Image 1 (cartoon, each protein chain N blue to C red):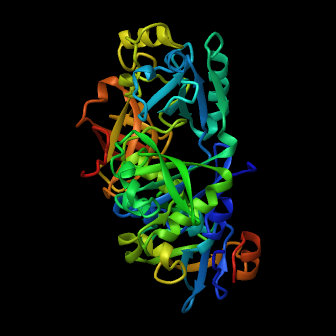
Image 2 (cartoon, rainbow over the protein chains, first blue to last red):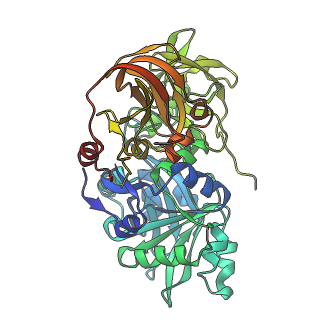
Length: 382
Length: 127
């Protein structure tokens, strides 16, 4: 049992959350019904505590070049104000973590600034790897995870709700914010204005936002968002619904779909790896070899989506079968609340990865029919 | 805290037992269990006429997050199953001691059963 509590722990207790250990943190699993929380995010809005996620600032004249070296993407090509999904790999091309990088305006000295957001369980490892890789670069790596909270508001009503906390003259900052971009926005919290970094990013497949806030101000912001929403408009949502939402959206979860043993190409993340960027980066040679050998070269398997034709769901580590022979393994799976049928992601032998391929999942001794489908399972109508 | 119905008996595997006419008992799962499982989306019940044995598995309960075995708290023959929970497993969450009952057994013998009070204190439930 971990002892790490976010700054919002008391809020969750007041809301009657049941807690789970995740990445070393006591996090709300659900407040009432995870299905109700899931549907609320699809139909209206949900509010999530993501304060377990890491936040690492990378600042300095070499910040862009350093991230090009430390991560697999070409972060130097990203414009100020934008965000980018990327990976940090080891020399063997194994995935240490997936993360989002936000490019912020240069500081007063004109130094480039980037905010790197790794997963909770990997935050320390990522911060340490970045620090280690920064040797020879004029850059400062500052892990501010312990003092930083992150609140997500996700769903079709998210923008409307958050706008009520922003002065009308500044609404354009929010309404004009593009997907995978971030901006400092003055929020009115407890009668005072506060500039907070607002990102239009998320892990649910819906429109939505993530707000970075100091621990000391996190509870007041959470309360202000909850209070400004109308009845039934905003539902506190826990990690159970976060997981079912991201699975429907076909988004990988580190530890399930991504690992040190896996590789980005097998996971369908080839486009994230910028092999053609200038200069060397950590894992480049190994990743180039894997790309050359083809997706699935590491294990012979590739990540696919599986749609259940029956009622039963596949779960993590259940075997995937073709004519009774094991040809893969489920990484994530559960009944899809939105679609009404079971969905799963699984690594499957490359010859069985074409959409339409009929496969079975071994559900504790009983087989259940599934079909390979393209990811994501769910895409919102814009 | 999860409610524990005071008039019922409970197994360690979180099934409840209600005495009906003669040796017929109805069986369901406690709110302690449904709270832990989360939203139930599928239930696999024993067939009417089949024999069940106290302490042995006789079905499965699947929630959004997990699959759990269903254990029979008594030994005997299944006389009836609840078709409503097969059709709408959410009933097990919304009314675990009422409309969410699972099956009935003509019981020959009981497995070890706890009083509501003992079950509640052992599992953090509320009478």
